[in-house]
Image 1 (cartoon, rainbow, N blue to C red):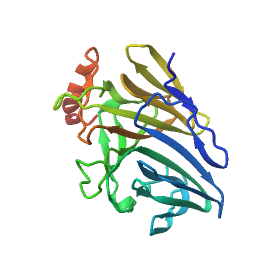
Image 2 (image 1 turned 90 degrees about the vertical axis):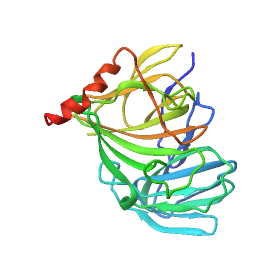
Image 3 (image 1 turned 30 degrees about the horizontal axis):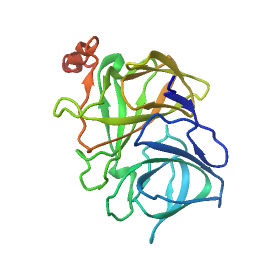
Length: 272
């Protein structure tokens, strides 16, 4: 049976997925100490380097982004990120201990590397009541057209204690705009406090199951319905990133539970 969920190692250097059912998306978790480096070439892929915690100096081609980052961890503010276009040499250097997520997808886009600062990350709240969650939009064409990319769409979501996120469950597996757009997606998770857990629910034609979310787990979604819940007392974070045939987003809600999403305007009106 296909594996859609795994845990990333956190060894020094670049940690790769041990399984990946997606055809477009990939992810590496880079752990560096002060002065330690990780170098590579993006090849035929575009990469968004998201500083999860700490600081790093990132060089990409002839561009150098000095000592970017600064939040202690993903729960302590908005991120710094660097877009690395295809066929570009890059080096990440730790300025103190740093953790960086490398989200990537195929690309032939000719572009210059650029930085996305915390001030350029949009934030807000989706949903309502006990299925509300807070978000950061890092690289989203519809709200940040100034940032060029071929396929990548990237953001962060914070699901409060006891709440559901990405609810009702949705899918995005066929191009049928404006109703639905094909995108693969991955969720890379953290939990606060770190001894806590959440649940990721996943359903496609192959299986219907619940996964236990803990620090550094990842849900890989080439297709199917998906949703997340936080255990009471804990906040669940996930770095989400998508890739498809274009960067226009449209989702199809679960036909059984989709009616719950229709309640959002009413719940918001009464302050929930």
